[in-house]
Image (cartoon, rainbow, N blue to C red; front, top):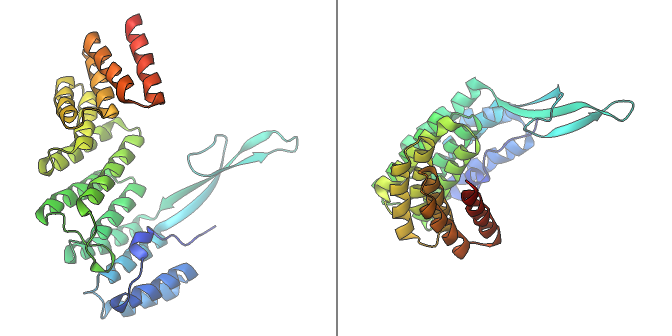
Length: 297
């Protein structure tokens, strides 16, 4: 069961003039005609290498070509989409699990093209984030992290003057860029891989080098430090974040947890009470439970 995979719609949005080739190529992608897609790109390459759309199209072509969906029968429910298989007695016999894998050769070609595009058009943030997104799909987390850090550093170089589709200036580019970076940090956290807390630390440090008052990165840095048993460093970052955002319940909860790790019950209770003061009903209940547990220790 093969479906046309378009990496992200943001990379495929069309505009007039030079974008006509991209519009035509997008239609070929939707039609699923891989031979016509390849022929179109070969023809376009003769005249289009000074057009950012060419690199976007090549990237999406090879991403789509690399993507394969495997259906397997397993005893347990998998991480992807699963379907229950019942036996003749209507008992559960197992699961059909769908898992997407990526062909290494074609994935490499996709990344080579988007890297060429970024080199020629370094202010196109959609290209950079397209690459980051795909590296996340490939679970290439070291390259994923490196690409994010390069983007952060370049953002400071150009004073956040990013371009998007059609080479148009991106509105509120700094906030958009930092918000997207935060989403990528959450993606690393959600893998559940402890080794990736160092990647989170490096991304946070890259942001704070240029934007020292970024509260989310101070909080991210503190979590990475706590996972590395550097509680004092974690508190240093968190107390700075508290000064910037004194009612931020995530920051306050992290401070409470850091003090708990340090066996400082009084300060842990103090900050859990601040979570109760400023938090919603769920956060209040969470803090109350933590305070109860501290009293029982």
